[in-house]
Image (tube, rainbow, N blue to C red; front, top):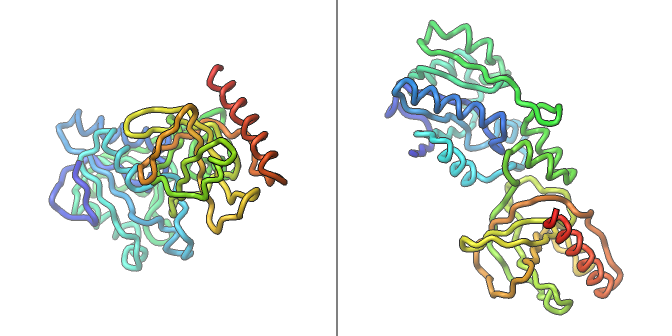
Length: 304
């Protein structure tokens, strides 16, 4: 898979998927699979045209709060068999392009033979471009357009916004269904205050990735991957109110039946279920008792 920062005319006659693809959920998967399938059936190459930064962040000046990192997005794109990925920087010039100008820009550089989008995809200034616009311009630009219908899970339409709300509320099980995989993040293990050793529960502390949406604070049943090995674990995400409050949220992971020095190593943490909300305890003894109880709940979940 080739990745480009910006668009160019190196590759043409493509099967193109359009979208931001934050999370790459089941709806996104349908778009990507369709684009790749069309490309293979018609002896073409497949491509994704997306943005480096979310348009909302450009217009509002907000800090990015993404579901997955750029690197994870690329890894997932590659898993679908995408040949080319184009990351556009959403800036003043791009924001002012009208829908027809954007489509002209797309055709000039990629000359798509097919375009795939989700049912609610929009583009161009004032979001005037949509599925109807792409449909009516097929003959003019010589492409086939395919609008992928919504995908539902438990009666709800799968979308990045719904997944964000579920992450904020701690509904990890619903998130995992909509992603069709366990929600995960990666981080480097940093040194903490080593309180875990004092109370008998060593933890691997990870700084939460800066541009990812903060999940609901609390305790979770998780899986951990370390150097190709898989472990069962329990994780706490929050400000450590029972100890010295941190300035930024920390992800503390206690790996069950594990006692190795892994400072500086990368961990992948996959979330399974939220056990409880963040809580302040009056003493280390109270905290220790609660951790034992939490681990018991996690062990029960693993046996189910």
